[in-house]
Image 1 (cartoon, rainbow, N blue to C red):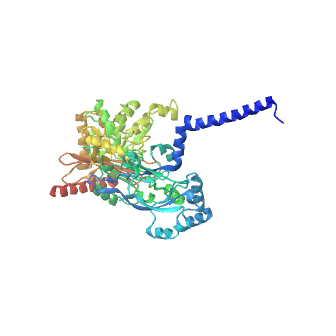
Image 2 (cartoon, rainbow, N blue to C red; image 1 turned 90 degrees about the horizontal axis):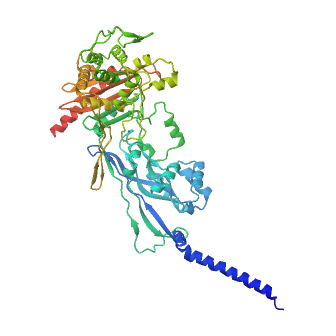
Image 3 (cartoon, rainbow, N blue to C red; image 1 turned 180 degrees about the vertical axis):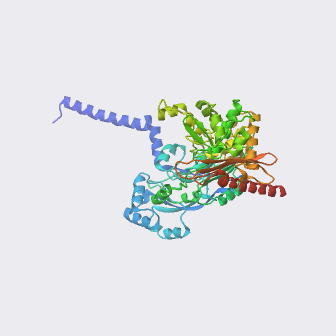
Length: 588
């Protein structure tokens, strides 16, 4: 029986509408969205493999090795090839230093990276490679690749170390060519010059099947070669670094930094206790890392640029220069008689010499390190002027050395005292205390070294730096430090130089133990009161001159006593060693 005409028409319309939908879908797939879907389809059979560049190496100023790339056998895991999860977890927990919980966590985090190779552990020993290799047929998801890792030739803080990128770092750097297996500078020069050392990724295009296997369809490799990282040539002198490392007693906590007066280049950078960057080249267990962090000696702390301490009497040259510049004193001015201290308001401020120094001018006040002279001198200053002048001498602010996480230090202001102690708090006593480098003022050993280097250089302050130049193939890039002129006229700087010379080379000078025969040595001692312990911190800062000023130094030890007896002898040894190296060079 034929369908009624109206029902037949409705069916035709319905079928026609379906065909229109199909035709529109085909047009959308092949015409309107054709290019987009072609790209997506291409990604299903074309894979771009990143080729990592060779990381730049690090050398001292004489091109002696500090950090080098060495061969490394590394264990990788491919999630997409895993067959038996529990068997794999059991094998890895037995053969490498991973707990079953850690392995499960790694597998879970990488569950969507089916065709990626995930770095599990670096620097596997030869014996362990042999043991694992015998079992790899049973674990197709595991592979051992021959790559490179970092070798640090001696313990130090300035190179820093590299480590595997973590998830937080990867989220920030994945668009810069980093992968989940990338190694990244974590601290020190490795971090500061990460882009320079790392170079640029290359890549290789492969045609693969659904399981990710290379089909080898391309007749020739489609490859972009990586651009290897640049080598760093530092200002560090390995011989001096080794010498200083050997003369510091292991139980001392402190820092010694030596600078080239003429350039600002760091010749030696020794913070103690020191750590070995090589310990980060393999897997660090949580227990081991916690042990390092909880060590009371704080071996990971870079005391040179990250440790801030009261500078004590090495700071006295700052109020001395301020007094000279503002005309409060000249070379002949004698202030209050030191009878063992000075009364300021309702408080008596003691001098370190209980019998007193008598009446002194600025040169002898520095030579004998008379506290009373500086107490009296500080009464001429307003706190804000004192603060500003200190900063203009590049203290209590970053030097901008080429290292990450440098600390500022601290100098209080009127606002700081008001905020912390109230509107009606008197600050004269605090200002008196600041004048001898005590109280709230904090500086780093690096800042003190840079200041004394500027004094040696007639007021020209060079930015401290570790990098001398980078070398990448035939390209050489010389580091250019910032240069600042301190706000002190040369005549006044010469008065300070005279005082520093007398401190070391004349009878009763507090720095006599730093004197070296046939070398002009200038310096200042300091003994910083320490509320954290019963013994003072020991300071000695200064410089040494041959035909011209060559090296400046800052020596600091926590809780070891007086600067003149503890720190100054180290300066003597360093200068004598430098002098011996100069003689060897002149004979060659």
